[in-house]
Structure formats: C-alpha cells, structure tokens
Image (cartoon, rainbow, N blue to C red; front, side, top):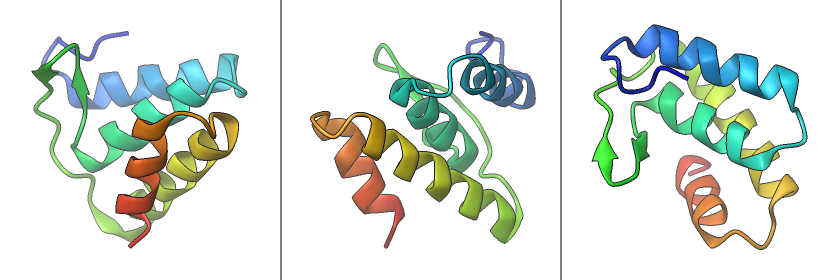
Length: 87
C-alpha cells in the first residue's frame, strides 16, 4: 500500500484493491472509509488526503465504515468512526 507516498489517489486505489482481495477484512474497509474522507492516520502519522469531492464519495465512505463496523463489532475505534461518519 502507498499511503505514505503523498499520492492520495493511489493510496485509495490500494485500499480498494485490499477490500477486493479480502472483502471480509473490516480493517481494510475502515481504512478505505477514512482515506475517502481525508481522515486517515496510520501509526500516529497523519496522511494528507484531501476530502473526496461529491456526495458519492461521502456515501462510499459511509458504506465502508458500516461494513467495517459489521465485520468487527468488538472494535471500538471502528464503531466510533462509523457513528461519527453516519451523523
């Protein structure tokens, strides 16, 4: 994955590919959701990803946040993210 390359579009592509390869991995859905909204951090480092434009990106981010929450119901971080983005 290329989240630290300062190429946000490619990082999003990588997370989409990760979800495609392992659709039952809640963490991948979570990271994709965060990257789509520009709110991605990994290992304490903020990734400068511009907020995706348009309602479709917002809907896509919500979709992946919801899937992540369903796949990992015990993960408080994912649940909190889903609650935050769903408002």
